[in-house]
Image (cartoon, rainbow, N blue to C red):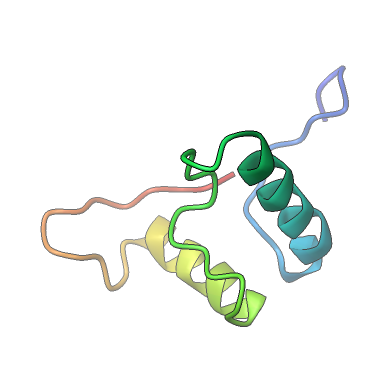
Length: 71
């Protein structure tokens, strides 16, 4: 963990409460900034965690896309 308490890591199911708060706060500050790519607040959070893991592994990527990791 860094000196300022920030730790970069992949998303976990246990992050749901803080993740949803962050999405809401960032959206309230700037509704046009897409902080959480393809996040659907109505879908189960586990679906988004699985999507992010697949993105990192390059699984089920749309044509022309490359793997990417969300930390």
